[in-house]
Image (cartoon, rainbow, N blue to C red; front, side, top):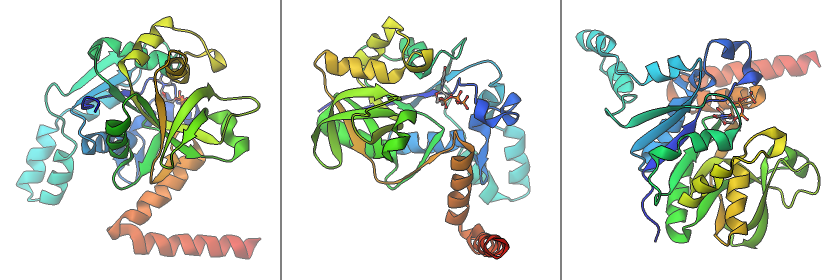
Length: 297
Ligand code: UTP
């Protein structure tokens, strides 16, 4: 059995150019699905999986993200005075324990691998660490990272979340070369970042990882990969070259690519429909819109 995973890295230092002009002043991770910022979904998933220490890799212009985790004492007192206990509970649910969050800075957006490498000194040398990309919001029960930590408890090694995508979309993802397909878990014999041609499979890597300590050491090479960026996928692929095991977990759940506008809109609809207080009104509206669109065609 591998050691418990209690730390997670949240790389949030990307430029978020697909959401310009919003991301000119708002960090992408603060954008909201219904009423919760993307980062809150990621934190809730990590907590559910037993994560106790949260490491954010931030960058210039991400101050609002750091502020989000401060306790809002005045607001709490006002809600308390007004007897607004439901809202108070929601607000308190976002509070983080003192010392549970650490921030490191990525001075230049040099790729996801580089962002994770920036956090290397905060992870003890013998500990596996989770990585969560807040762009990938996953609706699943149990939450995706919990599924992964349970599976990783059996397999050890490094584990990535994976899902089938259409072959023509593989060029946008890290893709697994499968050595052994055991159903929910696959063992990889290789990983390729954004293959331009001949993808080894249609199993794409999604933004959840449990990294063996050696992956952070592999990142020390700071080797440029696809798109001239330092790729996490390459450091994971090095594990296989060096004889260590890498697995993919076909997680149960629906993933939304909130780094893209279409994915973000889809997630807004899905999470809106999940809310008891919104469902009926929202569904009526959606049906009306669809009927009007059909009639106009
Ligand atoms: P993306 O590839 O989605 O890039 O990064 P991005 O900059 O966030 O967005 P676009 O493409 O310009 O719209 C995937 C994840 O990796 C982080 C991002 O913050 C995001 O969570 N990342 C990426 C970093 O932290 N640093 C980097 O240098 C690159």
